[in-house]
Image (tube, rainbow, N blue to C red; front, side):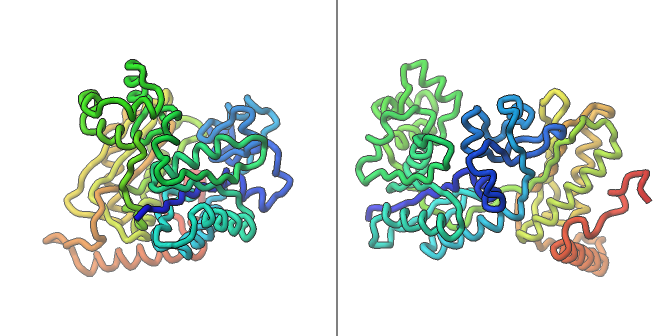
Length: 395
């Protein structure tokens, strides 16, 4: 059976949501992101802003330098998540095989439907446009790799300040021909270093890779060379996977000014650990590996991790492990630009109590943790604060 795979990408999603609430933003250069005086970055930018060279992940300081009239809109995570859920619900109504890649991107397998996949994409696009007011683009192909690249190509061909709202179809049997003229960097698994190595051998397009002997690519890149040549020929057998396994949970913060105060840094660690623990419990996950991330004033980054003897999801346990790493690896007084906490190595939340642990005390801790989670869920993250979160000049 010839597969029918759709790749959905919501065009400049955060900006599109902001335009729904403020139509005056349509057609003008604006970006969703952090304030320049707080080392903010661009999370999303309008197509009018992109004409000035502004891109996602660019610092807002640089973005304002490129376009002094750029309008900055603060990030509203909950609003975007709510709109994303409405989009994904429409995909799940169409097919049980939906693989959500991010808040604004997903694959859909509609191989079981008798309909022409291009027509299905048009109907979906029209529904999302009309009922939610969101622009979106689709790539349509027989596999995930080609559908994703087709969408990238279709969006890149758009001109003007309006979102692409494109649909790009690669018919069965034409995968290799479609890919052949594209730069090799478009292939999954071909990063800058691999592309640079290939360029030294005169290989610059995907078509060049497809005609190269597989044995030579394996000699250069090992087993990875086999994947490169298969992908270059438009071959990708990976299924659309409805549930993607969570590999890690992390929280981090970039300070508006470099911090040298150890008390403030540990207080921030406490807050980040609380956030990681809450997300872990919400996802019914517990992990054995706690990670600390520190970025210095010169942008170099240090990451260290510790493996515990049992899986945890409690705020205190995550914090204590992160604090141990912090005290071990932070040179006292060294300015910190960013600090983060992560949890991985997931297992089931339940764990065996140690020989000397008190069952009643453990149960009491769990009830307290659950109560705090419920309060924050109902009334917001700031409904309950730890005494350690209060600065020395607060009552």
